[in-house]
Image 1 (cartoon, rainbow, N blue to C red):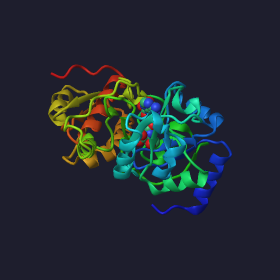
Image 2: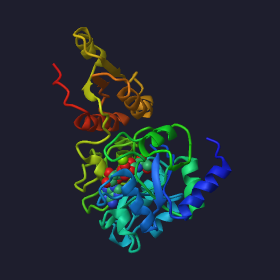
Image 3: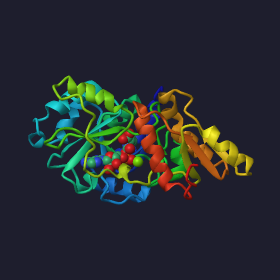
Length: 320
Ligand code: TXA
Ligand code: MG
């Protein structure tokens, strides 16, 4: 995506002046403020309607910038795993939760003693972080509990016309980053499946001598792990074969829309939220979305679909 230098400069200037802006990443659009500016960060929670004890991810332009944010001495291995995973997967859709450095504001961490860090792969995101002078605290740029935005138009629909948005086109990955907790003395734990498949993380950890087991699911709370999240307003049901489920309901007079994988998980993840949004506006009684195989990106797709069901507008009838 070619950056319009004047747009980038204007958005960076707004950040330096303590304002909120929306910016593209490869996963979803973020609603950012300078992470070192507690007053600016507080506005994020007001704009999203998000509880203030939910921590934010700090987005960095380069892995070398982690030193300002992490307290390495409190990592179980002094940061060796952090460095190895950062070298392998950054820039990319991986957030690493580490002990926070002393100066990291409580507003960013929700008062916790840890901080989530990631270097996004979108070139405009990294250019903006650099131009703004350092780490940007940013959640997804949607109202709390709703579907994350993957285009600038979605951000505008969620947060209104006054917000400054850096338009980087549609997000390439389409689901949020994978979150890995590196603070547990028993080893890395998965807090949220996401755009980086867990299998890739396991392979990297095995290369460092860990047994080839699935990642344990972490105990630390992450707001994206609330049961109800990513929710459309229309009732949503999941099925292995959405058309087969839809046929008898349509025959009985119900208006039913289906969302299908097309057999390509990367493409399904990329368009998942845009399609949920579009179908949510289609005025149907029920959406039926296809469950993916529980492999690779399928784990993140299914995670988001299951949470979307819990928060969707009206309990779907149990599948027959
Ligand atoms: O792909 C992404 O991760 C996107 C883009 C914008 O980078 N961001 C995103 O942010 O999804 P958000 O705030 O919607 O979700 C971040 C998740 C939340 O569930 C939050 O609880 C968790 O990260 N998180 C952040 N810092 C944490 C920490 N110190 N410990 C545990 N969880 C943390
Ligand atoms: Mg979010």
